[in-house]
Image 1: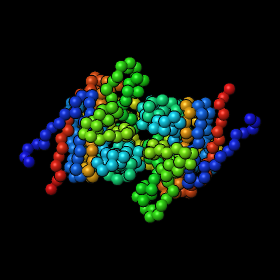
Image 2: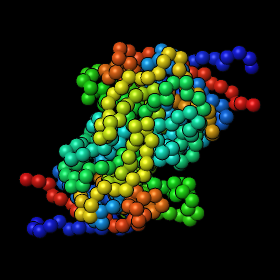
Image 3: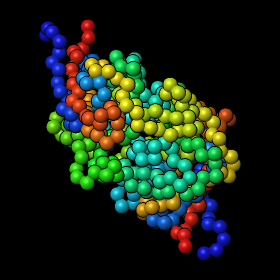
Image 4: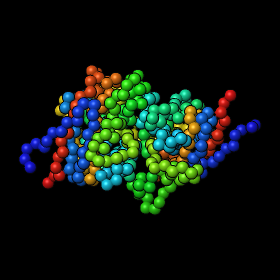
Length: 205
Length: 205
């Protein structure tokens, strides 16, 4: 195979899921620079094993992974490695995927696109039924934490074209949602969700 | 009914689960002062609705609940209210319940009591089968977070007899585990897990 691997789109406000073999990698691109991408990883063999923020934090001794860190499952195994991060490296593991309940509480009277439904739809689209929405790794989401434990809704620190490369340590499924949040400024001050992109990178060597 | 409600024991290293009607409360007592109690709450009607740290943090705008705050479910509803907290009010929502995998990684070669198995056993003991261990509200667990996002394993700031009162906003099941962690100092510098206690308080008024 020659040339750059194909670039796939995660449409604004929507989700996608892809299967990765052990050793393959996914490059997730913040095309326009201020888009949060909620990201999940499930074992291909048994989707009840998945990337789990609360288990990962205990293993890493920090709030979110950086370059070189493993993404850890609820069985405390590395499912992927964060091989590369060209962004300032500020991500979030504290905040649940948005859902229709959330937008209701924010004042929406009609259905609002949301990352939880995007996850279920993206998985279903590739033939996998799951029964819960794990706490996502929110790439580029900026949730400052004050010394007293209060949190706030920051804007991403990333720039157009920044990317994260996640390399699979086991056969897995990666799901992503270009977060449709347009009420709080987590996708930038303009509150304008945009598309993002991804590439699949082959095994190395 | 007259007098103080009966005091029940959560044996050191073990778990208990109790049913609460809406309006009743549970008082969880840190009898010896330095014991972390992993705590969960499930809807009695449908245990797939439960206290969810990642949804609660988004609602509260802080890392853990304090006196007067609602404990929020994965459907973004208050399941309980933290009505009273006599301790310095430092709790944890970042760290997963310990499990046998965890103790394996900490060097244990034999089975080690753990909060995850304690949850499943305590729920089964009152006839409820659950299929996952949600991220617990770790009462009195002290996980300092530095400005750069690194976390550390602190000792509880609580004192003997400190208690937290949680009042049910819906019919629910509360599960608790007196955390058997004896390798890291989260149950005090002596690494000596102890018993804790609880009382059921009637509806008010």
